[in-house]
Amino acid sequence: MSGKNVIIFEDNLVSNLNPLALTRPAFELICGMKPLWENIVKRFYPDAEISFLCRDYLKDVLKQKVNAKINDLSGIDSALLINGRILAAFSELPPVDGDEVIGVQDGVIACARLKGGNISALADAISDDTNQLIDKMNSLDVQKTEVQGMRF
Picture 1 (cartoon, one colour):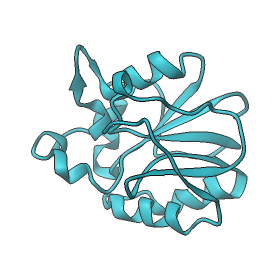
Picture 2: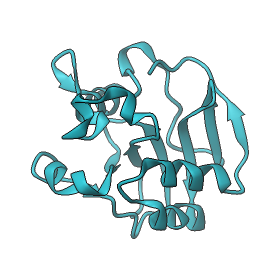
Picture 3: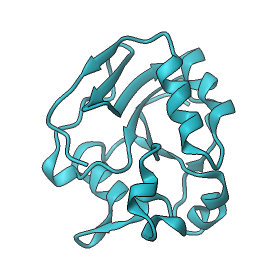
Picture 4: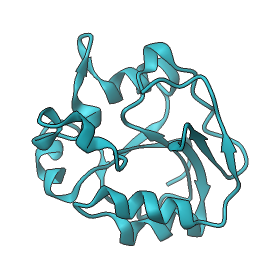
């Protein structure tokens, strides 16, 4: 898939949002009048192709609400991954284009700009256990940089 790709993902701290996040992805929680993911997209990436990574057991629930790729990274050559717990109204997010980098704030992966093999490497880590995805992202041979200005 060419163009600007943004992937909203759930991280391993999603359990902090339980019980609300037991039946929906964390980025589907409402903040204001819209889900967290919609606030992120409308404010920062209105022209991007949006995909989602969530706990596998929630994939069918999310498919009923959004018309997007869910837990499917096939055909994506480069993308910006954004942590779905981010509050867009209080955050500054990076552009889609640029070098590969994983942005970490206070020990939490906030965003990651990945290409090619690094994106496809994440496919095997999509499961009901969000720790697998975060562990896989941490294991990638991509520069990790401390970022600021994001609020979870």
